[in-house]
Length: 290
Image (cartoon, rainbow, N blue to C red; front, side, top):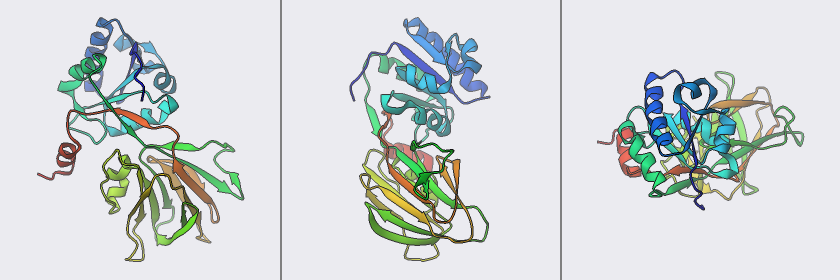
């Protein structure tokens, strides 16, 4: 990815956390002291001495986004960046996160390193999903594909019922699942919901997608890894109950019998500033491997 001069930095922070606001104040003063503009959401812009921007506009205006919070806060802004692929630096308010790699004590040094040009980015693939009912998109009449950084999940809505899901990969019949649901995850999302469903941990820069059934009723159904160039299509075959479609934990549609969910690799990637901590260190820390 071609590097662009950094003239403005967006600060995005976890809402209602005093520590995030305090770190944000220090970072804002440091950034403005370097002659750069600070952008922030309207709720905190005044406290930071920053120009107020709505999150979507901030993601598209800033030359660098610094997230103060956890992985969930980072995901919320990462979905908004789009084709511009603005670099994102994640500062975790606790230990290390899977996405927010830097600790609070490393925040100012990390920003200084970026401003000096001493950084690289990991381009993480994203997913896009759309729902078709009788050949038409059913999400509020919109035709655009909806983005996900972690995963696209089809889940049952009624306790005790089983979903019948017919799955195609690369336009070829793949599998018929009887399960509580199905997770289609990026390598970034492999350490999220897919992991709790027994999926593998995937090195985050690989070009693959994980299919992980949720509580499958056939013991031979196991999570699989396929190339990210394969489109995935899922038909809801359950005749008598609905399912839900969630993207990165946000429910975006109610699925009815016969609906088709299409999932493909997103056109844009998420550009995360590479951590000074190795992925193996982060995995050991987060998963308590010793």
